[in-house]
Image (cartoon, rainbow, N blue to C red; front, side):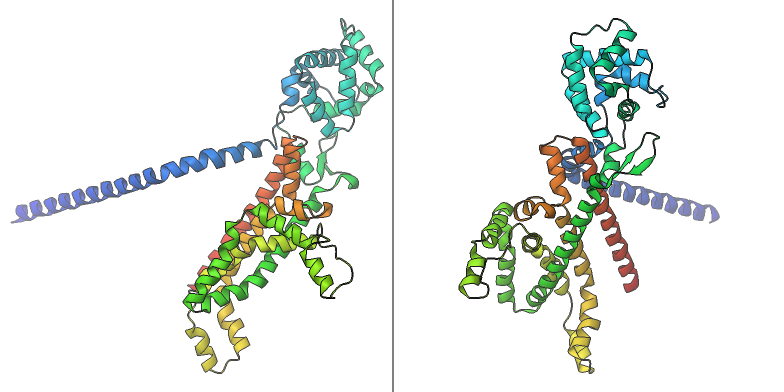
Length: 421
């Protein structure tokens, strides 16, 4: 009997192990099928969004211009003490590579990069390259004399320091410039001059505009979402159509419509003058108020939809219970109803704020020179000056701010969920 019981026990254990193996294989198969289903979308997102964005952001620290055009100068200047002028051999190396880069047509990239470090370097490099075309550079002494005779700035330490700061293939110049700082000759991070400090103000302006637009969307969107959540079904459908109608119109068309409405001889000024509200046209277009109005109109549906999805799930029994127990309607609203809508407020606020941070077309069309947001300057450096490093650095700053806001939202959401439990 003992041996039989042992056999029965071992067979049962083998059966359990077999069932566990089959279950594990089945689960692995399901996971594999799920991965295969999402693989095309994952690869598409990775190839057309994630990788290009990361490559662009990497341009904020890349610095290949001098390394590609003047490799010997870059190698030699790393050994320079940066206290006195370099020796004759350094002058000779630089003169030969300026002459060669002029032939290779790579001088414009170098001069543009050096001009970021020290104003006037572009004209200095261009003038030097023209003069060196017919110069005798047979010996280091002659090369040094030629450079000094072309422009006295070749005899200044600041000029050579600018070349040295621009030499590394990885640079912090663009990221520091994006927060109004720079590296000095001693490789210390210092603030730029006041007349050059613009990007922190632009970032603060962008954050302020996004905050005001978000609050405006919340003030206007909360009553509308409450009305939609508590209206009869037939009216809810019509309200939803009216809310989603702007999505069927191009962003550029909606912005242009506000330009027509807000201009000096536009619809609003004409209406106000004809009704006697004002006697002279108001300056509504190309003002900060025009940016607020246009952006609130564009982003209001996102806030309303976020609030509506939460309000629909709130049972009216809570308010009826509070009122039946003697609570004032205002107190019942703020203590019973409003706290239940906070997830929708947080989601809609974050969505509107992040979208407002990156808007470019609307502020560019309806705002003035002092109303442009950071996205305008990213587009400016990308399309007009072709300064990819600065555009990428500003993009990194915007990306970091957006990421921090998202982390704060996740933390607040997790804290709210823990409190509910």
